[in-house]
Each structure stands twice: as C-alpha cells, then as structure tokens.
Length: 260
Image (cartoon, rainbow, N blue to C red; front, side, top):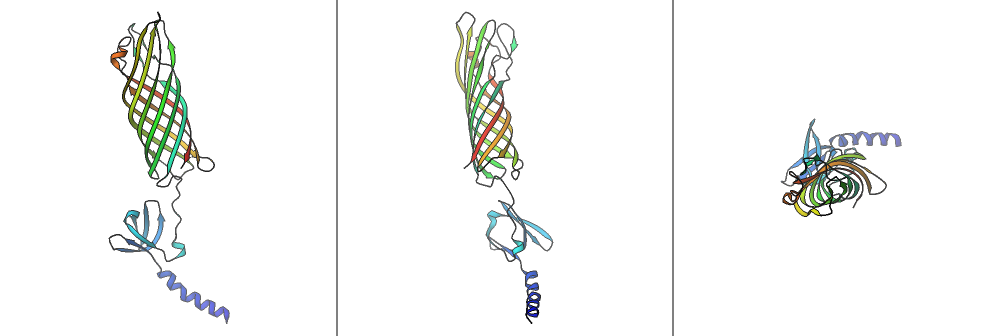
C-alpha cells in the first residue's frame, strides 16, 4: 500500500516538473519563461522552445527559479565584476634609444637599471579593468670617451587592462597606459664640466603583455614585458645630441598583488 502511494505521487509530480519553468521579470514589465541554461556576471541565458535568448542583467528586475535542476552554477571567473587589484612590481629597464652625439656616434647613451611600479585596477567587467600606475626607472651610468651619462624617469598613468581568460587560474592580459612623465638627465664631459642637467616633463605611455596567477588567499603573482616612453627637453640635450627628444625603455617585471 505504501509503495503504491509513493508511485502514484511520483506519477502526479511528473507533469508539474515538466511544466515548471524559470521566469525572468524584466524592467519593462515583460516576463520571459523557459529554462536558465547559463549565467555570468553580466547576463542570463534562457532556453525557450529550443531557442536561446541572452538577457543582460541590467535589464532584469527579478529571477524566479521553479526547478532545482534549473539553478545553474555561476560562470566561473577568478576576477568577478567589481574586483579591485593592487600590484607591486620590481624589474629591469633596458633603454632602447640610439641617438647621435656631437662626435657622430650613434649609440645607446643610458645604461640598464631598476624599475619600481605600483598599480591599482578596478574591474568593471571580468576581463576589463581601469586604474592607475605609478612607476620609477633609474638608468645605469654609461661612460664614453668624451662624456658620462645617467638619468631616471618617473610617470603616473591612467591604465586600461584586458584579461583574455578571466576564468583561468593562470591568466594572460594586456595593459595600455597614458599619462605624464618626468625625466631627469645628467651628462658630464670628460673634463668634469656639466653638459646636460635637465629635468623635464612630457607625455608618457606604457604597453605591456603579462601573465598572472593565484597564490594562497587573495594573493597574486605575475610577470610582464613591455615598452614605456617619456618625452625629454630636447633643447637641453642638444648640448651633446642631435636627435634626443624622448626616452624609450623595454621593461621586464616580476609582480606580486592582492585582491582587495
């Protein structure tokens, strides 16, 4: 008798389960019914009569789910919308400038040096973030037969970051930044007199390609390579050089970061 009652109850529940539908209540008053098949931080996909409709979350007022199996898992992302990331970087800067001096030599006049950087990024979407970067580069001293050259470069930049695979524990990203730079150059002749002592500001930029991954907790690791540049005071550099109006640097960086 007990088995028969259970069987009858199960049979009665089948039509109800088959008819059960999820519902999206939209801001404009419309109601869409079907089966939710996937979700992300920005949209919900609904199956309706063997057709799939993707609805932006900003258009949805309320979601009602009628069947347990229709409750999908959130699409996996390691960087959900609203994530805030802080990175600190240390690396090597290799100057790329080859300029002509007064003696007709075409050569790199700045030595490689250390790069320090700090970044703040706010992700407005899992694969897109905006933020700010502060960086300082110290160039190594180079000595030539007629002069010795040294310098440093600082910049503050507005940046945009695009993450190609935000769901992966190891992610690839590109970063572009534009802002203001300050470059200081010091050149002394072989007789000890100063030929260039200049500190000038100008437009600065950076373009990086990087890889980052998850450590324990909210900590991140990362490496990146890219090119940065900043303008210099060409009127001051003419004391020695004929075509020295900007500094370009190839950067190799190691980073550690935190999700706030």
